[in-house]
Image 1 (tube, helix red, strand yellow):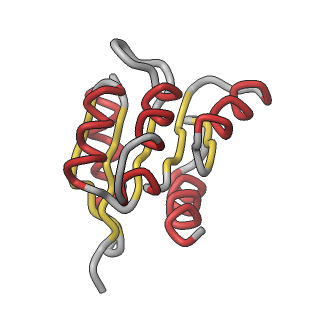
Image 2 (cartoon, rainbow, N blue to C red):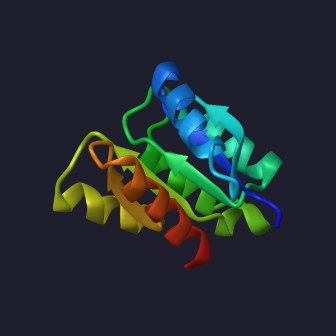
Length: 126
């Protein structure tokens, strides 16, 4: 079985690297790209056509909600890439805004590793 290809998007290099270690330890998941801002995320989604994007919201240059909207506006298969928002922010309004932007799931950075991995896998099969 070929692992699902994932792009991680977060402006914290330390957080991205730690998340990549967790994800890459799974036999069915593989981090193929990392971005520190939303515009880089859009480029990676277009160029790599990953199976999933894990997207932070608060980032410089282009935030995660705008990047999600831009990915949804791409031509071709990248526009249908599942996007899991993973953020330290919470609230129904923000979760609703993420859904309107085109996110498939919304998770808090306070979830445990098992919940995060379940959320990723659920988004891959949805």
